[in-house]
Length: 119
Image 1: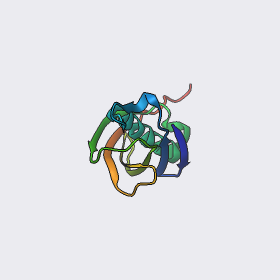
Image 2 (image 1 turned 90 degrees about the horizontal axis):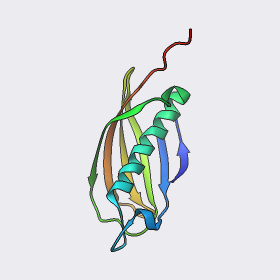
Image 3 (image 1 turned 30 degrees about the vertical axis):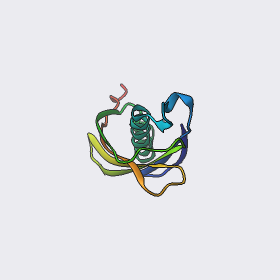
Image 4 (image 1 turned 60 degrees about the vertical axis):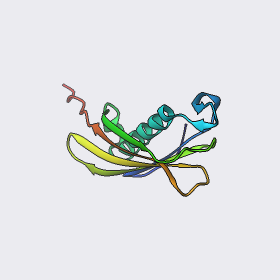
């Protein structure tokens, strides 16, 4: 996977097509797209909170597969919807490289784990 951009509330991640993330029949596997969506949210959170986000963890991730993707790179575009003191909520749109139709849509919540103060 390749981080293409990270902003204060967004990220764009590319998952390159490989034999490891392709299913028989020439489509991208669901678990690979799920992983891409999760990474995209984490990257956006890092863009917002910096190193304070490093210990944060996924508390929920839901994905809806909309179209059977062709055997091409997949692009994830994440946007943080709300960042509170303890939780961050985001949405991710996944597209086939060069395509305009969303192939999957994900929403996720991250638990923001604050490091204890140093003594």
